[in-house]
Image (cartoon, rainbow, N blue to C red):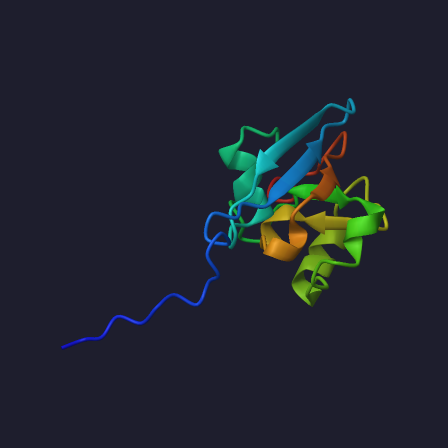
Length: 126
Ligand code: FES
């Protein structure tokens, strides 16, 4: 008979839901729930944030470009080489630019603030 082990998540933590703030090019803020383990791109799509995400996370378009708030940038895992190469090709590049499809939500990112650039380049069409 299979024994069921107790969950290792402390009570109360099971319902924890991080939040993310998206700021559109006009400065309008949206504070949305961002489930653990989801990509920031999926969080944006699930909440009707204006993000094209043309390649659906395949790291081929850069239309999920976000500019991470300076205070949060260092808390993200560093981009890998493929993301950096894609960012090098995008427009409106900022020192804290990232691709939302490459950011995975963790509890440490609760409160993350990102801005949407006024213009994104779809590298699938270039
Ligand atoms: S959705 Fe295409 S690179 Fe992120």
